[in-house]
Amino acid sequence: MRVVTLKINGQEMSGRDDEDILHVAREHDIEIPTLCQLDGISEWGGCRLCLVEIEGSAKLSAACVTKVSEGMVVNTESERLAGYRKTIVEMLFTEGNHVCSVCVSNNNCELQDMSSDLKIDHISLPYRYPLRTVDASHDLFIFDANRCILCTRCVRVCDEAEGAHTWDIAGRGIQSQLVSDLHQPWGESTSCTSCGKCVEACPTGAIFEKGKAAGEMVKDAKFLVYLAEMKAEKS
Amino acid sequence: MSSTITSNTNDVGTLPKLATVWLDGCSGCHMSLLDMDHRLLTLLEKVNLVYSPLVDQKHFPDDVDITLVEGAISSEADLEKILMVRERTKILVSLGDCAVTANVPSLRNPLGVNAILERVSDGALPKQPDTVPLLCAHARPVHTVVKVDLFVPGCPPSADTIHLVLTELLAGRTPDLHAITRFGL
Image 1 (cartoon, rainbow over the protein chains, first blue to last red):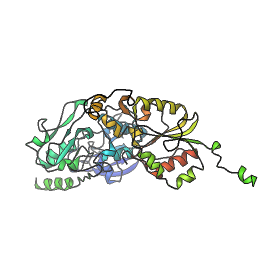
Image 2 (cartoon, each protein chain N blue to C red; image 1 turned 90 degrees about the vertical axis):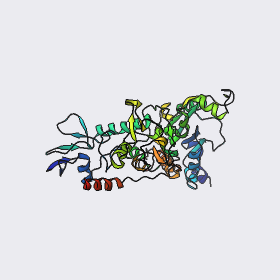
Image 3 (tube, each protein chain N blue to C red; image 1 turned 45 degrees about the vertical axis):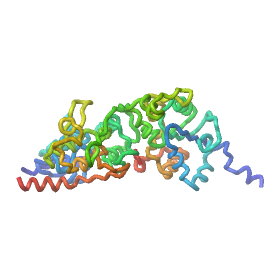
Image 4 (cartoon, rainbow over the protein chains, first blue to last red; image 1 turned 180 degrees about the vertical axis):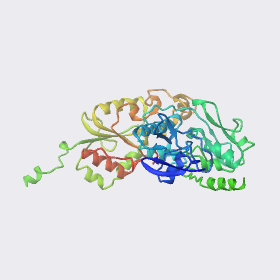
């Protein structure tokens, strides 16, 4: 590990060369939007909201999975990036069935917050209205596929923090869907420990506690950082 | 005395015309409009409410300055009405989540019209369109059907928000609502 110097949005800063752009930026109070990144679990780079421009590269890079390097010049805000981010969030809204007003996570939802941060006041893309299921077979929790944005935070938290790997993604492209075990009802899963970590990690109202009404589901996944630190110390 | 009468600014004929329309929504946005309370009185000195579920007027006037639309486009009747309203309105405002996103009315969209009609009529399809307006395949946001000039998300938008929208539009400005509105709230 060595310390490198770089520039983000014109600001000179330093970071460790094993750190990614997202975290170095955050340490310097530069927020880059993301929905799939969660401290305490591995980076995935799937939501593409943290795309940034790096000088010398025509391609955009996901800040959460791109390590900083010496002399790097990064730009996290531009008209082009704002346009892509807005389109990505609009696509998330049209791909599933998101009805904020009656959702358990109303006012406690990262997708809703993101639409507000990006100043989205309507969806300009055509809605798909897919027919998706609600799995209420588990004793304690419910999975509503209508609200799932496939961020895989539940998949990673279940695998890495709990060690159960109950969740995974089945299918490809637009057919991709979250499944428990071998696509069995969650309540029949033999691997699920009912720990509830996926509930806390889920950024929307897709996975929630039974008995919660609209706006009642409040989540907090900060404990994952502590768990990751304790695990690292022991290994 | 006569000068007092002639200087009276409450001659409604000269005021900008405001309309409000209620399509597929719960009327909550109109309730929120009423929640402006005493501010309604001040507002009505600056604007002429020419058409609304709140006033007794059957005919939508030809030249309306501002129309607030509550509700999604769910039936052929909604569709017909919004096309007419758009044609006769200068500034069309999507008021609330049902108009902006189709919100709760859109919950039926993945299931299809027949499944919904069978469910609500206990298995038998009700006769259409004699009994109720024919349902469209999907409940849609207003802007997918006609051009919308301003979006006011919220379920419902607060009275303060609606007040700001109207006072700003009447002053000839476009209000910036991003900081005070969002889907769902």
